[in-house]
Each structure stands twice: as structure tokens, then as C-alpha cells.
Length: 179
Length: 178
Picture 1 (cartoon, rainbow over the protein chains, first blue to last red):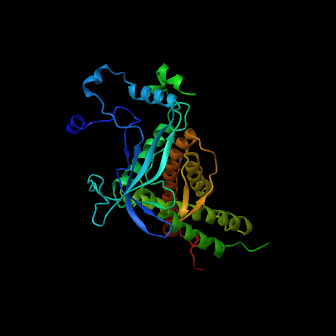
Picture 2 (cartoon, rainbow over the protein chains, first blue to last red):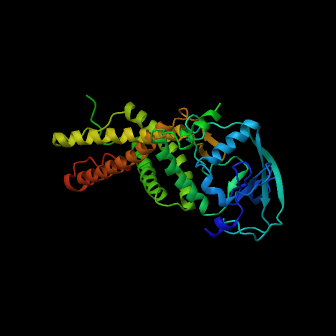
Picture 3 (cartoon, chains in turn cyan, red):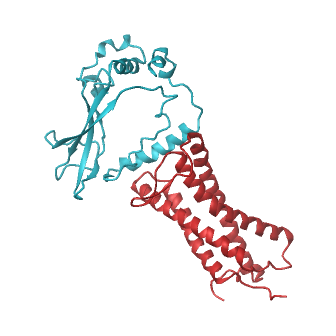
């Protein structure tokens, strides 16, 4: 809670960074494997949320903001892979790595439109961290199998219930945002 | 008139005991798998899927073997309800040997999960992604596994009843030796 009070938080979904949290093992074509963490770093410059004004903002302000930004143009994030040095903790997501670790920009994520949850493709996705493409493998972090197990239970519950409109989906301003 | 057979064919007996080992191992793997969130869960799920496919293949072979050859009759003096229970439970066992792997495979397909067997060997999805179907089959998979567990316990109990109490040759008809 102290951290939430003291740290600057992004004012938008569009200007925040997103982190893999857990370490993974990446293998290159030569067969060399490294432990890495990755983050998705926005091209949109960071702006801190004014926490003193939170009470004046609507409950969907983050969704309305990102929908409005997407009407102006696509949003981009760079996938930045941070490579562990020998001795860095690779099985404990709670331990940060030193800031000077090698970072590689490996690709760009472009989001050019938003869809409402009810009609979009995201509602029934499981973000299981163990479903990985070739070349990416889990680390020994025990949080990964625990996340996988919990998300599988969650997916079964979500998939088994009627698709009620989400809170954001009941907002007329956001329904307009969906093409 | 052909002489009545007293034993199942050697092939059927071997497949029976091989499958018995695999299915019982599978049930214990499953219970361990769903009772932990440690890396053991991942490891056991990776074992569960190819084992399920192996059991499905063996079940298909077994049905063919069962249909082509003669099988021993139950003793004439066995009460009718026990004959009915024997045939009924065998039918349930055969049905579940197919249903469990197929429900599991269909369930993963409907949930949009990759169906990895080993390394880069993946099974193709059986159905298109369908969230409601995934939720239904995911629950059915658990329920059917519990029904299989109960049916195997009954089967095991009945086998010992024939072996030790009735001593009527029914148990001997399935032993791997002559």
C-alpha cells in the first residue's frame, strides 16, 4: 500500500510498462539458453497519475482514455528483453535484478483498435504463462505452475458462465469505441 | 459344437493387464496432478496427455481383439443380477476407456489449448474453440474420471469375489498365465 501511495503510477493504459514478472528461458537458433525477463515499454511518454484528483475521475476513465487515444492513432510498445547475469535470482519474481543488465529490443506490439469484451476475442483467453512458443520455456520459478493452475480453474469458471456485459461494456461511451 | 473357451485370448489378457497398470497409474497421476500447484503439476500434465493417447490406442486395439475372438461365458449358476452387473460394468469400462481420452482431447481443443504430446509433437484440435463446450467438457472429464475410479473399484472387488469366494474360474479366465 505504501508503494501504491508513493510511487508514480501511469495515468493511462497507454503510457504504462507491462512486465513478465517471472523469469523465462529463451533459446536462440544456435541453441544458447539465457534466463530473461521481459517488459513491454510504451512509445507514449510516461505521465504520472494525479492521485489527488482520483475522486473526480469516472470508474471507467482508463478504458475511456485508451479508446479515445486509439481513435487518434495506433499505440505501440517495445518488447524489451532483459538478460540475467550469472548469479541473478531466476526463480524468484520478488527479487529485482540490477538496473545495468543487458536489454534487447526484440519487437514492437501495435494496438490499432479496441473491441468490447463481450464481442472481442479476449474474454475467453487464458493468459497461462506456461503456454509458450518454441524457443521460450519456463524458469524454475514456482509461481509459474501456480499461475497456470489458478488460471485454468478461472478459465473453466469464466467459460461456464453466461457472458454478462462487463462494467466497461455497459458504458455507452465505450460501446461507441468498438468499431 | 466348438469347445467353450475357459480363458480370454492371450492377446486380450496381455492388453487387459497392460491397460490395468496404465489406467490405475493414470488415476493416481490425476489425483496428484489436481492436488498441487507446484512444478510437479506441469510435469504430471505432460505425462497425463501422452498416457491418455496411449490408453485410447490400446482401447481401440482391445475392442478389435474382443470382437474377433471367442470369449468365455460367465458360470451358468451365477445369479442373473450379477451377470447383468458384470456385463454392464464391462460396457461402462470400455465406454470410459474411449470417452475419457476423447473428452480430454476435445476439451483442450474447445478451450483453445495446444495439445502437446512430447517435444514439438502436437495433436490437431478436434473441434473449434468454444468456451461453453470447454467448461462443460472440463467438468465432464473430472466426473467421468471419478466414475471410472468407482467402476474399477467394483471391477476389482468382483474379481476378488470370483477368485477367493466363488472360485468359479472367472478370475482365472483373465490371468496372464495358462
